[in-house]
Length: 310
Length: 289
Image (cartoon, rainbow over all chains, first blue to last red; front, side):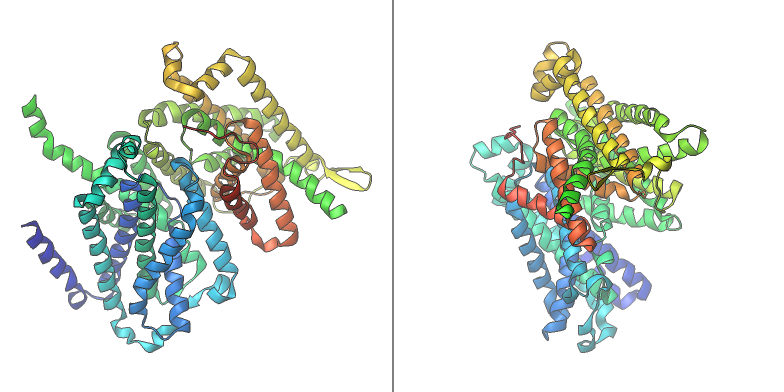
């Protein structure tokens, strides 16, 4: 039953480019890109217990790989997207031995420092267009009329793949190890769960998701610059989306991104107050409902059972 | 030769200020095993508060500094006792996310209230006055800030080592649950530590705004500097943070001299180098949870 509903909604979402106008399709693409980034961040924070304040580095590295490689090599930008994920994953792989020396509290800030380093290096290097950025040279080789639709479909496939991947994670034997680690790390380790290896794997996978999302997001705008790509707001939005929707659940970021966009569109006249409101909501949720909207729904659903048990 | 001496002296003096930024963060981590992501924003809020008070009251900014310190102390106490204490658990995630939310709120609130312009606190001719010794010029203000930081570290050291309250803080850092059995209210110690950390952060922010300029966006880079200070210095002792502050400031001053466009790049790279080669920091003991 769930499978039929999922397939049907995927079919409906898949048909959007035939139905929606340009502006609505761009918004839908943006929602899916944000969902992909948030779901990747959720994979690391909600399942791995590691909070990162530097995931915008992976978004940016994915985007920059797309723009530089398709400039120098005659490869289609659409085909390049998965390799952008691989590139971001490689950056995470390189950072792992350094950042994993920090305990979880300081991993967050350490990751931010790593993002700053990549940002400064990219914005000083002519190969990456230095501080002025790069246009998508490969746009000459493709039919740009199809670009918005292709971008949307790629974002849809990525977001769906991340959600399905998390579903698989929750059911697989490896997922049991992840669960055990999340519930009690010391106990899990004593039973032979290799917690460090799990965390590294989640970190690398989450970087790959962000890299692909960044590449897709910036492909649509045909232009990438250090200020836009390394904007810490990519990370800030991902955190708010996960906190509002519920960390460590699959539907959390899905609910979160819809609420986030709704709030942003209502308060669009005052972007500063928009972030203030989101920050206050995050604080309140941490105090009263740390599992976010998703947790509130679960609480609401299970209340009758709880009273039956007395 | 004279360049090397200049870098050394300037690095040393700036290091005192950096150490003051790191001090609060290391206290919080040492006692509560969490980080305050809003640390930099509290520092900048302190500077902006002094700015507003100085404009309203006909008093010299230096006289108002203790007032702002007291205000920040109160804010820190309230933050811990009303918010952070309620989400503390063995899992640091909720506390981190809460202080992250606070940092976003504070930063955007400051932008809305003060605008994004550069600001500096004017303390009169002292700012540029300097002392000449053997052909070298030493600014009075950097020197005074260095000595003030040193004095504060000394006071805190005495407070932690010699007073009953200091002993309670050190004991809570070692094992908060056992300390609770001896009738010490753990959560009040936490509130005191957060209050002190906020006070020191605000003080560092005010001194920074006297030395150079700040914007409401400066909080982020201050958090990164504070973090680098305590990792490079080593966790586990306040004097380690002082060493870390001086080390990081030397790197910043030298890199500003040789590669002015690099920003904080070399400081960040120094952090990575330390994490790779000496993760316990310059003076740190290996800290186990």
